[in-house]
Image (cartoon, rainbow, N blue to C red; front, side, top):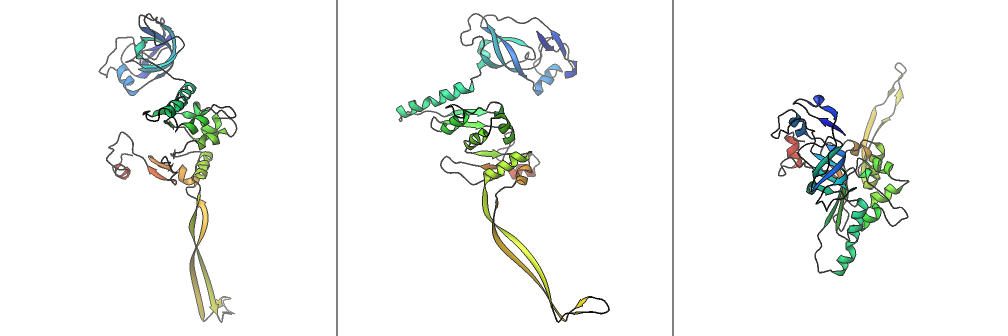
Length: 318
């Protein structure tokens, strides 16, 4: 199998791509065919010899991985061949296969199986109204890669999200943009799916379609628009034969200011495309009533939570 090896301390450009024997599963172990491996900052420290953990040479960097179980050893009962799993080790994931203790692996649940399991809670909750059922969380980043719609079938994320309150499921998804969600789904089904998200948080949008859709979702409101006018009038005006200019003994200049009501977007496209770091526009839902769209100032988790957004901005932390 192919593996990226560190044979001596140095930088990333000194790593080597080599062929090494594939591992076999020992007792209570599983061999995983790695489909994705994460590289972090501390991996650069490990291969440079600047980290507290110093694996023996040669070794592969990378500590987190996801893949498919290829084989299992004796004593393994919770993991089976073909399972999609994820895991974490100190190092050694930058390769095609890895053997790890089965207890370090976590099964990756299929989205549809999870949604079905959540909806199956509904009859249990209704049958035991005096029993407490804790909330469950549906959390997904890069949602555009996992979104599915049922259209005329009784399955699909739009059905699940619309029913998620009854089984006490809190869905939280993040997507690159509305355009990316639109391109991943057939026809106009993205509109139905978008309507099931009761609370929407918009960060800075870079494409006009996403910004225009976000502006439409925020709606319009009556706003007072100001207008100015200037006018000049003269009395007994005559034209000079020498200069050809109008002359008058009395002249007036009138300036007026007026207001009129016009229906306009609460937040236009320009607002969404010029949002700064940690700024957002939110359409919130408090569980009972929808709230009007408003600006929302975010605070990064790594900053002091006791400092407001504006204090962090003044300190240059944003």
